[in-house]
Structure formats: structure tokens, C-alpha cells
Length: 447
Image 1 (spheres, rainbow, N blue to C red):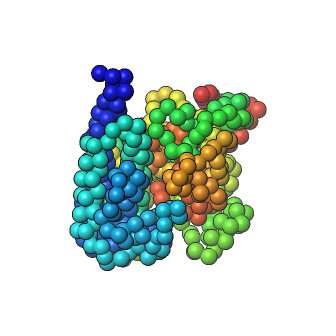
Image 2 (image 1 turned 90 degrees about the vertical axis):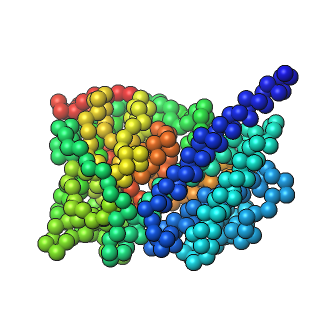
Image 3 (image 1 turned 120 degrees about the vertical axis):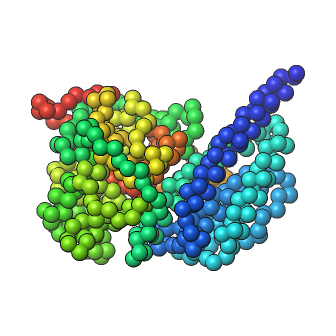
């Protein structure tokens, strides 16, 4: 066997294994998430930021058709000549696209969208059987990106379904959540502790050794002062104290734009909170309406609300560097989508003595604007539009949520949304500058 053949054969086998093991698994999972839906649910859109499930199914398919099949299959003809216009999201270099606010269309039908998925999956399989030489590496890289892209849309699918169902007066349930096991390890009703972290010149960012999005790189030095991070997330009960103290009526706690949002949008509680006929707080979940559980993490708050709560509590939000440094030695485990709960859970004791709930449950707002790392270069071509073009007027969130696939999460993962966004599973972890002397109830925890 020649040297070239020895190099190509493992590459082909690796890509084909990725197809059979990962491609089929991720694509099937997207469709599994749609199984609880009725046909009428596939075309629902409750606001501009929400996309219908049918659109998510088609857009993730278009991604593979456009960035893999059209790029590597000579003379490839799209499944439908108008699908590129309907299901392109924002790629200006690819061509025109349908307005985001008008994605709820009666056609194509749900059946046609599933036929589209079957067609592209079949052509992807054919491509991998025939692919040879240097194209294999690039095909494999694009498949990997496409699968992570589809996992992002799996999370968006759940958050969008929740928003639409919450907008329906019938308050339909998407699924029946598994019963939570009660135990003695819940920390939600106990006082927060603050864990100390040392300052100095540190390293953050992805080293490029495995998959990561371009916005996570390059790994680079950054100076941080000593700081303290809360041992768990802010709970519903703690946020309720903020509400009862008039937090939504006191401008002193709010950034100017945040105070405008409170008044213009009528905010008086987190998204999906409402009072029942007795005046008790309830919250919409993917399992339907439920009473507020005070020990669960507060969820569906904007950056403005997270920042206002932190100011009211005499604390602040962490920077993304502080957050990442705190998790560099922690395993990536938590309440992810695989738990089947699709809802934040109370904190449990961390075996290492470190912070709890760093991964899963809710995306954690940081005070860091979403911008490029030093030395960042977006990829060339249309895929360069994936992240870099959004590095303006948004804030970074870290850690994943109860709707995030576990395999999609990394310590370096940078999510980002505008400051007023609330429909994502977003919550709060407090931080503070490290004082010259720590009180006795604070625990040193230097990474």
C-alpha cells in the first residue's frame, strides 16, 4: 500500500464512521424532539426571534445541502430551487433570504420538509462513499460544524416551542417531565457562599486541539484580579425577594436601557412568571404551568434583569474570563437535555467543594460584551459569517442549559444574546471583587 493510500484510507473510514455514528444520531435527535408536536404545531411563530419547528428542520438540512453537497458534488441540483431562499438564515454571501419575521408559511408542508431531510441524508451518504483524497478532510470538518450547528438548533427548537406554547391561552404541555428526586443535598434554600479565586496572568480560550467554534479561539493570555464567585446560581426565592422589594420599580438598580425596557415592555417578573387567581406565582414550563419552586434557579431573565439583581444584592456579574477560569478543572456535568427534565433543578453539593451548577440548568449571563479575542480571524468564505458578524451589541453567556446537549458543551463555549433577550434559558450567578481579607465563612478555591 502506498503512503498516500495509507493516509487516505483512515481518513475515509473516519469520515464514514462520523457519518454513521454522529450524523445519523444528531439528525435523528432533531426529529425525535419534534415527536410530541401535532402537525399544526410545526408552523408556529410567536415573535420575530422564534422560528417554526418546520423551519428549524429545513434550515439545518439546507446547511448540509449548501455547505457540503453543493460544494463537493459536481453539478449538484438543489432539492427545490426556492428552498435556498426560504431556509437560508442570514448568509449574505450565499444569496437573498426570506424575512425572519415571516418564516411561518403554510408551504412547503411538513411532509415535504421531512422528504427534504431524507433526500439530503441520502445524498450525503452517497458523497461519503465516493469521496477520496484531500476533500475528505474538508468534508469531515464541515460535517462536524454542521452537526454542532444542528445541536444549536435543537436547543432553539425547544426554547421556541416553549415561547409559542406560553403564548397560547391553553398553555399546552410539550412533554411530561420525570419526577425530581428529593434529597438532602439541595442547596437552593441555604445561604450563598462566595469562593475565592486568585488573580494574575491566566490563559483562556480554546487551543484548537478538538472541535470549537471560531469565536472561542485563539487561546490567549488575560490578566484578572482576584475575585469571588457564588457557589451556586441565584434561586427563584432569592429573585422573588428582589421583586417584593420593588426591584422592578426602582430605577437605581437598572442600566438606562434596561430601565427603558422595564417601562416600555411592562416587565415586573421573569418571562413566563404570572400570578394565578389566588395571587400565587406560577411559571410556564415545557410540562405546562407549575407553581414557582423557590429553590430552583431563576430562569428566563435578560441581561438587564441579571445586572439589576446583582446591583440590588450588592454584587456584580462575573466576566467571561472569571467564569471560564473557575471551570477549567471541573468535569462537564450537570442538568443537560439528556436528563429529560428540560427545566432547571436545585443545586446539589459539589464533591470538589467548588461551585455547583456551572454547567447545565441555565445559561449564565456575564458582564462581558461579545467581541473578538486578540488575534481572532474569521474563516474565509461564507462560513466566516457564522459568528464574527455578530460581535456587536451583545453579551456573552456561559455554561449551557437544561435544553443544551451535553456533547455540545465545552468550558470555552461562548453563547451570546442581546441584553433584552429573555426567551432563552438564561439565569444569574453572582460575583464580587476579592476583599483584602476574607471572612471566615468564605472558602479559598484557587484554580
